Length: 397
Ligand SMILES: Cc1cc2nc3c(=O)[nH]c(=O)nc-3n(C[C@H](O)[C@H](O)[C@H](O)COP(=O)(O)OP(=O)(O)OC[C@H]3O[C@@H](n4cnc5c(N)ncnc54)[C@H](O)[C@@H]3O)c2cc1C
Image (tube, rainbow, N blue to C red; front, side, top):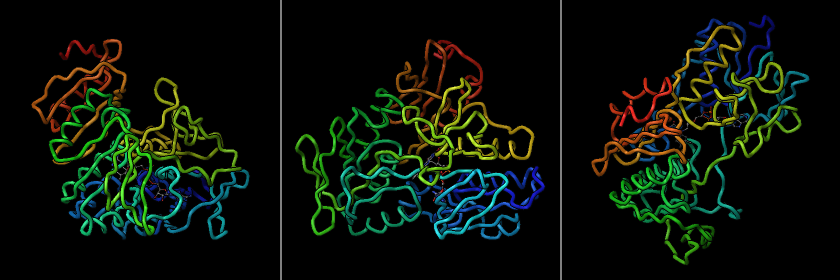
């Protein structure tokens, strides 16, 4: 543990940032901790944004009660984007021009949603969903809208389409791949997810792209598809992926990972960047996986585990991490769960399918790599031990 007074500075007051700070205190770290965030909000949770917040059911997304920060001795500097990092001086610079010194720097700046290509002006009715403010802006238009087009059927696009349909809108979901979630889970499981959306009234348009967004008087009117179809739209949500937030590192000397391996901040297997005393974690960080390959992951549990690892790197000792990766997505009344590291090109074995809920095993070279379930929480979770050691998938079939 460092004995000097600058302590740990964490850039990014989101999930990863607050978890590192909290873990440091839990590990007995007594030096100053400063959490710097670009947004005005204290650290909040993002998964509810495309679920309960969009549905208007729940607005409580804060990750910690207001009194936590003073009690834990964590200084929050909110609404202050970091614009530069100087490892040579051990300082960061804020947009205001102020500088903050650090002994140890932790970077957890997340992602920026990719805007629709070519749409440069600010068009009313066109949304992305990454922040709480994004969610509130989108939710605020639902009551006066009747049609919505969601561009991109990844996890966030699928959740938003489900949420908007549940709120009574007529929703089209447009995806150039042949099924939703094809990139993450492959087309076989994607087809089962298609079925869920179609059964719930989504106008699912796969295998087709978006040619343009039609705008009148700075307000969206329609979405024109590459097959010539025009879909009227009071609301458009662009869910075509995100890019790691690293612009503030220009000139810092901190290495970034190549785009072909996911981009983001290049790290070793425990979050060290190319600069001493600088760590990165969460959606923005590209850690080496257990096989020594660079891998950037955009999931909640993964970020929480990395925060524990980084805090232990700083204070000493080993972090306890789950050996099996996990994430989830809620679409309509179904929880989709993904255990392990299934890949879209793995062999897929659907072992249970009642027309709505299902369980599927993924395998590579005959070895179980992952389990995906929809509405089958118990069945998915009980396979966890099988993913902790190499298991022939045939043993489960
Ligand atoms: C709508 C939505 C739904 C999701 N649902 C799920 C789900 O169901 N399951 C799941 O596993 N995962 C889900 N996720 C992903 C999960 O929320 C992320 O993996 C997690 O938030 C990553 O934490 P992070 O700390 O890396 O980034 P974030 O939580 O995004 O925090 C990064 C913070 O850094 C700040 N920042 C950026 N640049 C700067 C700067 N220059 N200076 C200072 N601060 C800066 C940002 O404002 C932000 O607050 C969802 C994400 C979104 C957006």
